[in-house]
Structures are given as structure tokens and as C-alpha cells.
Length: 131
Image (cartoon, rainbow, N blue to C red; front, side, top):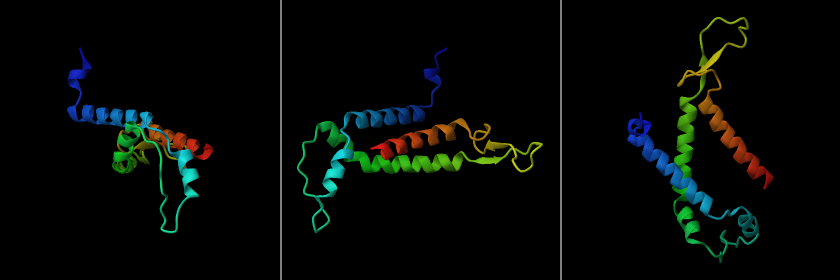
């Protein structure tokens, strides 16, 4: 049996959109080093007169970067609201540390969704701290 026929079309579109965003981000150049240099060029009006070479991939990425970041922030907040711990209500020998389960998926806390979410953010914060 082919599972592709059973997949929700909304989920498939979301996956496709996320994959496109990932490809755009991977193809565009990082501005991390450039922004460090540009900070010293801020003029009295609070702007930097920028002259740089941008590829079409950079422009594609930059055109939607703000909206994409807002979308991901909203997604992250919704995931945090959905996946949070709650007391599983079972009998435990340690009343100070009850068994917790995810409110949404009922996996033992921390659930796989929450772990994947926090692992991704820990990896990205490690990258920004090392740069």
C-alpha cells in the first residue's frame, strides 16, 4: 500500500513550502560576517550606505525573509503551546517528581516533538555563539 495517497494535502503543501524555504536559505549567502563589518558604517541617520553584489538567490531569500521568520516564530509558539508537560496522574514512589506526559501527544515528557524543537534551537544558538 502506498502511504502517499493517504497523506493530508494540507500537510503535503506545508512540507513542500518548508522544503522550498530550506532550499532558498541554503542557496543564499550568509550575511553574518558582512553585518559585523557594516555595523561600523552606520551613519548619523542610523543607516548604512550599502554597496554589495547580491545573487538572485540572495534576493529571493531576502524578499521573504521577514515574513518567513514571523511564520516560523508563530509556528514555534504554537508548538510550545501544544506540547507542554502535564501530570500523567499515575501512582509514583516519588511524589515530588511525578511522571509527566505531553498534553498534546501523551508521550512521556519531554516528548519527541518538544525535543526536536529544542534541539534545533540549541544547535542554532550554538552556531550563533561560535560565530
